[in-house]
Image 1 (cartoon, rainbow, N blue to C red):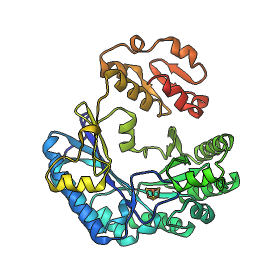
Image 2 (image 1 turned 180 degrees about the vertical axis):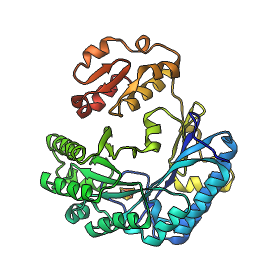
Image 3 (image 1 turned 90 degrees about the vertical axis):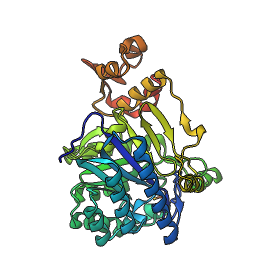
Length: 385
Ligand code: SF4
């Protein structure tokens, strides 16, 4: 039987919170792990969560799956195959679903990639960040330039037809030339999708401590913005479509899973720290891996009461606008009105359009950020939340 995606279909996010080593800038929920047994036990726990969550949401069709982290490719290929089998056995996965795995260049080989493809994974997101080994070394990444090049070539050779490459800018010591050279290299490899990240120095990270000690100087805002605009213009000239603030793709390769987040669609998160928005509820799995394992062992949903988020309808409206404005095409205010059953301008003062002149624009029913607005998107979005 052919099962197709519908407006009711959800995205499934699966979190793998382990990495080969912790990058110096990283504040994601991830831990260095080299213990194969522990990784295998984690995969087992995830499988148990997959089967219990199905009981809660049996009516939902899944049409996108995103296996993120951390570094999902750190798991043995066989464990990843079992996770995929578990998902297919317990959820209704629509034909043609987009199924993505994040991978670190230092953790993949042809055989692993073939197993991914056999298990139904059809999109790979490679955490490249740069093609400059000096920069990769400073970031504390577990790979160098050659690993990055090999990973992308190997993914293509293995048969992946939808590859994302993550690229990072605004890194201390990174010159415009270094950034442009890395981008040129990336364009030459022609991945279908490229995500652009501006380095944020977050509290608690080694980079933050270095910054406090004065041994690391953050890139000035002006340089960060110049690098962003350089990237967008180079990528557009190379045929990429700038469809979201930080993402470009070749036509037809926009990330279907991430578009769910930006289009107020439902998703279910599995694994520690994973967030869900489903059936009108927002909640997050416990961020403690140990607590997570205990919940699963006891056969309980891994959600602590304090991790159930209570959003008012006004909060939800803010989320709708905030995420919708991330898309360069903006959002249709009629969709807002269909979703919330109320007139957009009864909720938001029409004067907001005048106040934000030059930063947002209305074309008919569509509201979007202008070029200038993209640079100060957080300031604009704050007006709506
Ligand atoms: S690979 Fe990604 S998740 Fe892991 S430590 Fe580095 S930035 Fe964090």
